[in-house]
Amino acid sequence: MRDDLLARHRAALPRWLAMYHEPPLELVRGQGRTVWDADGTEYLDFFGGILTTIVGHSIPELNEAVHAQLDRIWHTSTLYLIRNQVELAEELVSLVPIPDAKAFFVNSGSEANEAALLMACCARSSTQVLAVRNSYHGRTFGAMAVTGNRFWSASAATPLHVTYVHGGYRYRSPFRGLDDAGYVDACTDDLRQLLDMSTTGPVAAMIAEPIQGVGGFAVAPPGMFSAFRKVLDESGILLIADEVQTGLGRTGETFWGIEADGVVPDLMTMAKGLGNGLAIGAVVGRAEIVDSISASSISTFGGNPVATAGALAVLRYIRRHDLQGNARDQGARMRRRLDALAVEHDAIGEVRGKGLMQALELVHPDRSPDAAAAAAVQEASRRAGLLIGKGGLYGNVLRITPPLTVTADEVDAATSRLADAFATLI
Image (cartoon, rainbow, N blue to C red; front, side, top):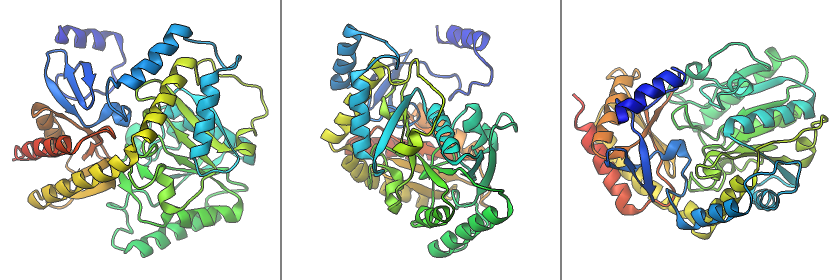
């Protein structure tokens, strides 16, 4: 049955749709942090549909909220008032560090970044944008234009004039040998020089991930974004924080990733975990920027009654159960075990991340990227009953991101299975 489904998939869907594992899995059931495939095999889910099932699978409180809405009405569009949408907007604007904020709802992280870029360009009357090397902001045309990772860039055509700055991926940066302060200074000097040499007239915005997600959970040193912000403020350039992967408490230390640097962005984008699997994204930003679009607009599906009912339940569940605190505690537990694993295996060039957003970069003895080792460990982990992700510019980074409800026992079990997978490397 599974092989028949794979053949049908290949016949009816684009060949460029990437899938994990050989053969690919069909996941048919989930409970908490555990999922089962069509053959009944059980796995610990430590990737969560790309950091999306942020509170886990089949959570009764969330199911009840969605079922209750389904029994009332599925869809209306933004041409009508949607109570859930208003309540979700009110909660989000109360949680972001941006004063006098408004929210606009869409269907994905890509669409959220598209909308934020449009707002910034309208507010600044400019199509010039700064982005960070090794970044990923989505698969749509505008979001792809600001993605600094060639693996995910299908076309060089772009509606924007984009300039890429240093800073996101320190492990392979030309400034890697500098200490934290020196690295921040070098990247900030680079930003200033690019503004002087590579831009003309006003620049609309910089878009940046607090931790680069698809880029392999690359973490900038403390103070980099606050230093960038000072330079941007000199010219009135807006800052868009892409919180699609880092938001909602995943990093443990703060609710939004950008807050770790004490930075208040002008716009923030979010998706993935906001709906725990339902299709929803959002832009939250300063009211005058959100309102700067002069054309009339609507959203047929963005912020629909079902998606916003689910997102409200997710947001309240995260806060009520202090899942940010659990991300901090269990993330520290997982990091200790990953650090110990790195001592045992020279193939692990770096352990990095925050909270329940941890990564291992796999390398050859000369520290060049080892994508084959990453693929082998990912497959061995699956055979051991653990699902993890992969990423990085060179496909050599393992990404480990369980739901924020994960327990200490599950962290221990997952890292033990990962250790078994590393033991299979030759």
